[in-house]
Length: 272
Image 1 (cartoon, helix red, strand yellow):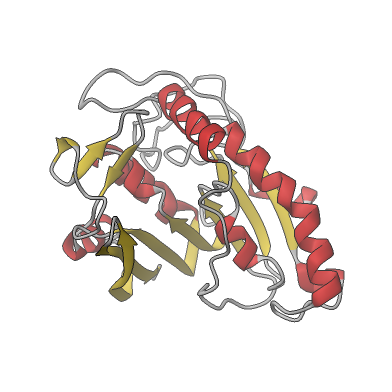
Image 2 (image 1 turned 120 degrees about the horizontal axis):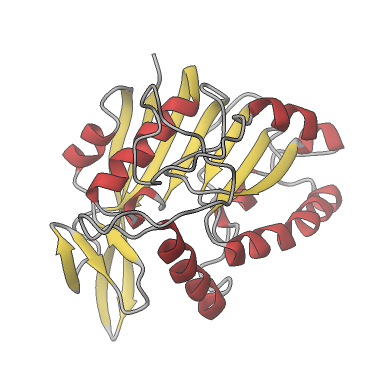
């Protein structure tokens, strides 16, 4: 996939811009993967360095405690070019491998990338032996998997580079202005006719609460931020796209003898 990946990348530009600046503007400078510069201290926006450090600390503490596998992955044709935005510890990647996709996984956190990279060979070996996910019996069916250190607010890819973008629990870890910037980048790199799959916690999730830094957005002691979405917020975030579906999925979790609700917003969009 190396040559194909090179073709998908935007050319580097030494004039590095504020990562909070929308990169779909006509004169927007380009940022190389993994290169960050602090954003101005407006809107209490976390800059790239803060994000990287906060999430590195998170993964250092938690490792794969948020592991497992995401099994309810939407279907796409074999050979699809797929971007996984914020690969974390590899939970969603585990559900993608074996479908014959050409996957590029990015994360701002080097710690997250180390965790995800470490599962790559084991995943392919496991599927070779078992063949139970997508029934991959050959290398061709595995597809490709590449990792890049990059900030999702300023993606290093050319316009319309991907057939689909998966943004699972990543957009919600930014404050409002930067959520819009990331959504704009997602839309930019999705081809016409391509799909965007979004997931984020819903407003009634059990973890919604704490130090509120803007409506529905909370910051924890480790510096990580989480926004809890309403349906209207998700639709507005991706309003240039055609909405295919938006649902709230709820399940019960027993905490301290009480049955509490986890709540996730799921949406699918197509770029017309």
